[in-house]
Amino acid sequence: MADLSQASKGSDGRGLSALVAIGAASVLASLDLFVVNLAFSSISASFPSASPQAMTWVLNAYGVVFAALLVPSGRLADRFGRKRLFRLGLLVFACGSLGAAIAPEAGTLIVARGTQGAGAALIVPTSLALLLSAYPQERHKRMVSLWAATGSVAAAAGPVLGGVLTRYDWRWIFVINVPIAITGLVLAANLKETATLRTRVPDLLGSALLVTGVGALVTAVSYVTEWGLADPWLWSVLATGLLALVWFLRRCLTHVAPAVDLRVFRAPSFTVATLGMTCFYIGFSIMLLGCSLFLTDVWEWDPVPAGLGFASGPATAVITAVIAGRASLEPHRLAGLGSTFFVAAGALWFFFLTERTGYFPVYFAGTVLTGAGAGIAQTGFLAGGVGGLPAQEYATGTGVLNACRQIGGAIGVAILIAVTGGGHDANRYRIAWAVMAAAGLIAALSALALREPPAPSAHDAPLPSMSRTPRGQR
Image (cartoon, rainbow, N blue to C red):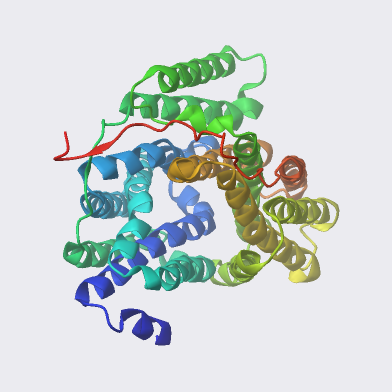
């Protein structure tokens, strides 16, 4: 509360409204990630006719839609106004949460989760910019710190809150989003609208192709063990996904306002960072859902102690993220160290975590390792990837890296369900832990190629950027 008082001192009501409104949005995004994973078993039990593969879309619909719309949403905010898009995002997220809370069957729940993902994609690119515009420049560092801290605290508290709510009814994990979103929506009315730019509307067909392509590939991975390699359905879905992604890439190369500006991939360090971030999040999502299922399905813990048991990982991530942000280590060392922690945790669980193993020390040690890895590696990949880009490409690069996180997460969930079936057999989880370790190893090897870019010389020209002219100057 002392930080909040200091942050608001000397500012008008608009600044305080911005802080609370954007804090509410940050809480929504962080809570949703951890709470839904912990409630996955309870949600699946409510829809016994839905297969485990179908239920993965309760998680993946959010991530895939979020990834596809994240980068275009930033340009939409430039075109139509950040405040307008931020408030629209909160409204869409609230509607999606309400739809998920009252969903009568799995299909409706999946659509509602996709709606939440669309709302989050509108919120994320606009939130920090609106907060900073409400405060003078000398206060920006403090505002960024508070913005990050809000999400971190929510992430650490998410498993515990999710356990408490799930014990009564999993639908409460979505109900609780609604008053938070409405609070942010009301307070955001006091925000100052940012200047709009006369820029083209991004290629939304390209975004739809990305959703189709990633969705088809994730579906193929989810069903590969059930269908078998000889099943024509598997190859049809794979072909559909690949064709959609090829078409998406073609549109990105030829469209005047592409969904994703591929010019950022001209920087080798950025390309390596996207590979590392994607692989890291494959392992991260296997850990995130796998740890929750192991507690609730294999060890059959009650949701409340399961939430408390899992919270050690997010809590460690909060601490290590703060340390990583202040450390003097180069980005490639941070990314490599964090990824190596995931390799160690996967190996530890592969050899020693069974249905008879106690929580201490094996499970607990693994969650601490993965929490530390998450806090450190993400900082390294983000800093190392974006650091190799010209300044005018920072926003696009950050959006692409965040989209890669979501895509990697969707693939990881699909792999986990494919190898475990969402069942109670601890031995099947050993395969998942091995894949988690392998994904961490690829991320660690990618980190080796992340190097500080050379200082630009006077002869170096920046990458060309899309021309955007403020309204009224044309």
